[in-house]
Structures are given as structure tokens and as C-alpha cells.
Length: 344
Picture (cartoon, rainbow, N blue to C red):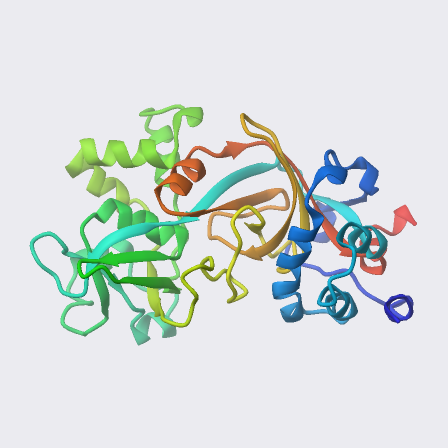
């Protein structure tokens, strides 16, 4: 039945993003070209794919998702119904990591907990771009409006929580609340790590999240000013309906999975698609993952953020990850050949 459904998709069009088609190359490879493919745990990847595939757009994904729910032989499923497509835009591949932070906080401010996490005000939803980070944090616009979700004890960790987009707040009574992305002020993200490199403070290979945090804390006045270099500001929402044993919600509004979920640029890779990762570096990763998230700093056909998990250990691993490699998106067969007709 699945074969018949796929055979009917003779007019399937390739998924297309906003980038100019002339700037993008599509190359279809075989599974034998994927380094380490035969050694991966394909069943784990299939389970993650099945969690979000029902939300994918495109009628050629629907029969594949229906079959995935039946838990077929995982490696055979991917090899029979997909083709690996290398999408390139002329930029080198770059893999980084992200995680779910855990911060200390309270539901009321005091001398320790004085840095608020805000819900998005209605005027920020109605106007984009809205105020800058500096105007939000130093001006009166957010005061006395009841928009605070909680207060935390570390402005640096709060800044990086905004970069991650979701996290957990450990309250003084032992309870934990989870927060997720609730909107932004509409300004472009500016990397403070890149700014430190531009100033000559560090070389590019030296910069990591931990290095940046340490510099800001050693230089409190200059550090506070450095954070203002990023005009982008993220608002949050409290999440009460998520199992504490599950990962945070990604851009598809479903939990993401440590070691199997990645953030991508949806202008090139459709959310929900399986993606084969070949990451170089000190700890190589050759694994089938699923594109279930996005990020303001994740731009390009060969750009991905690997989800490393929750807590400090995951944060340290994510903060040092910056490696080259390549990634290939697994597309339904008809869609793959429509994207690269010369391969037929």
C-alpha cells in the first residue's frame, strides 16, 4: 500500500525554502556513501521521527509517517523509501550544540533573585522590531505589569537561557518549573562571542559559552555592556503540561530528544525530516537525527545545532562543540529526484 501511494506522487514538487534556487546545489547520494550508516541505531532514529512526522507538511510525507507508526524494520524503512540529499549553499558545514539549562530562581524577587524572566507584552507581538535589549532591561516599559514568570540569581545564565530558548527553573521550595520560547522583540541576533573575537579579546577557536561567561563575570561592568551588544531579546512562557522526564519542546511544539534532535535552518531543511550527521572533531558523531527545532543563529544549508540534553554537564558539552563535517537530509524518493532531476 505504501509503495502504491508513493508511486502516485509523480508530480511531487521539492520542498523549497526562501533562498534563491540558483544558489543551492542538490546532490543525491546512496546510503553506501554515508560513513557509519550501517552501525547506527536506526530504530532510535525512527522512534524520534515518528514523534513529529504527523505534523509535517507535504502529502508525500503522510504515507511514510503512517508506516513509521507501525514500527517497521528501521534501517530497511529509511533505505527503501528515502534518498540522502546533500544540500549545499557554498558555505562550509558547522555543527554546534545546545542544551536545556537549569537556573536557580524564585517566584518573588529579593536581594538574591532579582533578574526577571518576562512574558511577551502585547505591543511586542504587534510590532516588529520592538524595543532593543537595552531598552527592555533598563527602561520602565516592563515594570509593574505582572509579566514576570520568575526571578533568577544570575544575569549571565539568564542571557544564555534566552539563547537556548527553553529551560528549567529550580525554585527555593524544591519545585521546578519549565519555561519555553514565548516570542522575541524582532531584532536580529548578534553573537557576543563574535564581538569578543572582533575586539581581539579571543581568537575564534578559543570562544565557547563557558569562556564567554567567565569573561563577563571577571569584567562585570564591561561584561554587562557586552550583553547589550545583542539587541535580540527573548520572552518566555511557562510550560505546565510537559512530562519532567521528557526533553524541552522544539519548534514543532513537541519534546526533543537528547542525541537525536537537531536545530536547522528551515529555509533549507523541512522540520521533521531525518538528517544524517557526519560531525568531525574530538568526538565525532555519525548518526541519523531528526530536524525538530530551529534557532536564530542557525542559518545555512549545512548548519545545525545538536541537542545535548539537560543540565550543567550537557551545557559544558554543548558549549565546546564547534566542528566541521557534513549533513544530508533524507527525502522521500520522488521529492529527492524532483530536487535533483539530473540524478535520475
